[in-house]
Image 1 (cartoon, rainbow, N blue to C red):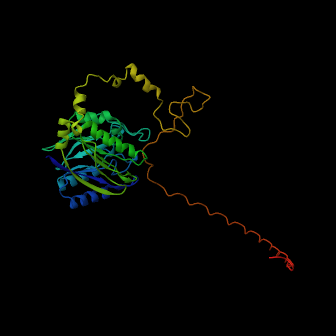
Image 2: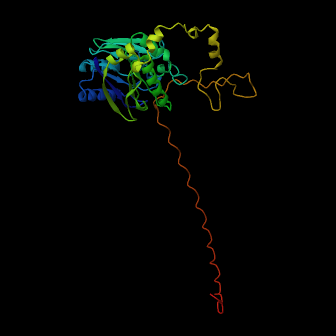
Length: 352
């Protein structure tokens, strides 16, 4: 058995204000309650939210605060990600901090969530790191997981646990949970997918075993999720197959096919070029179709690009609304005359 204790922190987060004090406080409380935890993972963009206007260079003061915290508690720490300003552009970057308080890697998200996460450049380098005497870990962020090539590459590089901070506040979280399970099964590894709540997401963080089974799925409020993992489960699955059956990593290694779809100049890539522009759709629009059905050659409507996943923080108070003039009183309605009284009917001689 090769045990290793990882805790996910699913936190209530603001998208407009700094969450640094809250994240630090929750890490402190987590490690007070569960001192046996060896690694802590926080959700995507947890510290400053999803507004690119908060982008700063790395290293920065917030990252340094996390480094101090990791060294204080002698734990590995993935504090989610930051919008990083570098070389005149913005990246979505997750630092990996070792128990000595040193940043050993910074992973830049390869697939920004377009067309919503606009203004963010994709990274191009995969991230794996080794925990001595334990195993190899890989890092992926949010939308990366929708591209199975990213997870398969991490597994082919030896990753036994994929750490996956996410910020999902949308109605497709159930689909992501299915992808997380499929990722674990097809790559025979643990997947740890940590979401936030509030502006930071709708929760439902998940730990998945190498068999694709759910070890734990959180609800929609703040949660601390400390779980001890046995990395021998990964090695056994990769040796004898998932539940003693399929051995997908070995089959991928021994494949006869070369996937030419990844070469952009190949003819079988042409279909993808017919799908239309990667833009946020306007009301009534359809991807790849003209906005006016009578003008087949008209270019598609391209909405103005967003600059972040969240609106910017409020900067100036809104002007007060002018008071509404009082409404003139309604004239009273004249009383209605009472109905005439009818004479009683003569019932004499009638039968009952």
